[in-house]
Image (cartoon, rainbow, N blue to C red):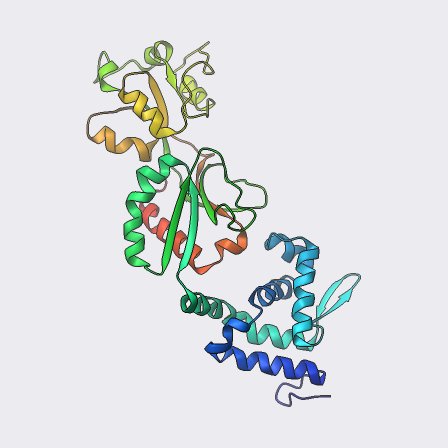
Length: 325
């Protein structure tokens, strides 16, 4: 039986009534909270990709869990949205109508509900160096610009689990090559690597012999010993064992030991520049590492949330002028 004479689409009576009710709900803010938002959002991904498997991968769900969401939505609406074929899936007219009505306003609906119910809370995990040296000192500016988003920061050397959707953290800021299983990475900053020393250990501060310093001084590292090979190659240091020396938690700990005249350090430039400007640290050489950067990392669905996008845009606005310098 055809109920929609304007579009020419036909629905079962129960299905048409549920769809009609759904579209009325979308136009009523007081009823938005009753919408099955997760199921609708899942439906939009499946409809756009025309694949349960691809949509499940994008949402970091199992195919079974995704199928349950679609089945729940179809039960809510009172009828099927897809035809399942051995070769794939096909949208029914009811699915096409739902996609047309829901896809664009869905994000706005989610944002409106979030604003209506409470502030966003975004949990970020990162290394203590990045948190204490850069992120926390700058969060006041973010809070002033976006008072509806509350940022919680946790720190640690080990990578926490962010694949489970916010149990430990929503997103992470990580330094590395940007490849993390089941997670999406967005580059925010590609810092240079600095070879640093205390000015007080340099015999000739204006023209230090870096080869001699690398051969004679202890090497201080924050876990990544392979970085020393970069400096050995650059300054032709042979037969030096980079595996022997003090290993510290992070770059700021390395810098603290360097300032204390305990050896040479290899650190990111964002941590070294301020102390170098104050004369407490000497930058002996700089290397632009093409393989590693700081990334904002998370599940795809988390990165698509308004609070995550806002946070990412703010990070980019702070770092874009210095990326690659």
